[in-house]
Length: 409
Image: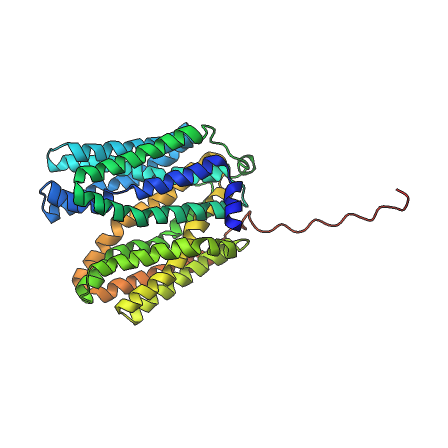
């Protein structure tokens, strides 16, 4: 298969990184079941558990912000290893310590700082070790592997938790330490990749030097809002509005993972050589179409169908934004911009559920989905107005044929 040949062309360090990322995601047993652990394992009320998780989740934002400076000052491998060790240390404390509720929030904060650091550092390393032509494929492989791991992780975590919460924590910690060992052995210390010099001539005026990149990352927030919003709204819609089994919520996530894994590489093939602005507008159109299916035909089949459609938009954004950052930011600031991209996701996780919860309580479910529909429309309008530079992966013009050699040469 063509994609296997392309995968083998990537540096060994990246192939190891992608495997480590999959193992890390598949080993995330704790986070999906954290509320259950705090309520049943630590005898907290559901309200207390929700508050502690919200406070601890600010660690995702802190981790995203720390990842960039650490990548740029100490190197990509150091940032990856620090992320894994912090995550393991925080979860080890949650598993073993029996203290006041605030200690659980503090330990969760430490664990999620590590979780928040990992993805920006991983994206930065991909930018370092790939050529512009390889980057869309590399980010697609990374995204597909992460989603495959996230599909496996909660299932394995549920089996482990049914046996023992200590087994659940031990599996998460061991998976992280295994990833740390793989990265230590096969990911080089050198953080500079091919093509870094070609980016050093750009913006030297501080963090705002790459204005066009900064705007793209910030505007992508409007495509992240529906993703995080659906994580909040879909389970409630299925169980309280449609009065169906909570088990059907899992079907939505299964469809999402299946679409990413089965169509991610195929979509990357068709995205190759397309302009960044065109791809971002197509992504917004897919988000809009998927959410329109829910708003105008609210039912369980509509929810499932919409998942197929908006997942295609999710794939495009997840590949295009980090690729644009890697292509247009000088090497010394790639880590900071990848961290900003992670911060946008963490910020959405913090504010979107709260805002939608207030809206749902006041006016019901329909305004929630209408708001989610408006978000990608705003994003599309903003991207249409932005000046977006051409991608460095655009096909090069063919070289002119040499003149015919004179006779007798």
